[in-house]
Image (cartoon, rainbow, N blue to C red):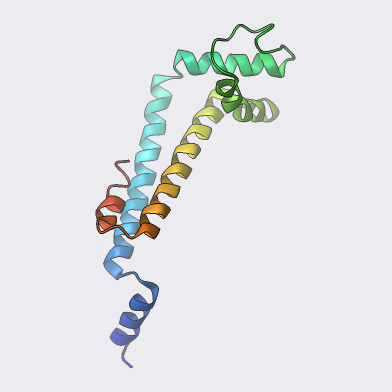
Length: 138
């Protein structure tokens, strides 16, 4: 068997062609680049007031105040609990909670996008290649 045949057998066995593999790597690099650029732009814009308030509520709760009795809040409790893990981690590590809230948000978005990619890949839609090529845009 020649090297060309070996590569052909390998790609057929693994269900991926070399072109699809390269496209996947380009998409991964593009997603990383877009994520890094969006984090830089987010640092320039700062934290929006709603997120800042929820961070403040989390900090007050971690200091011992009670939600809805000592802290006036109109959002449902899940809004507060959503930001509690990064705010608590920021307090433990001595890091500004805004940085960890941003990281937490990006992590949640990337995990969700990854799950979507797995679903699209396993579903075997006819348009799977074009959907995966649009990954960086999503």
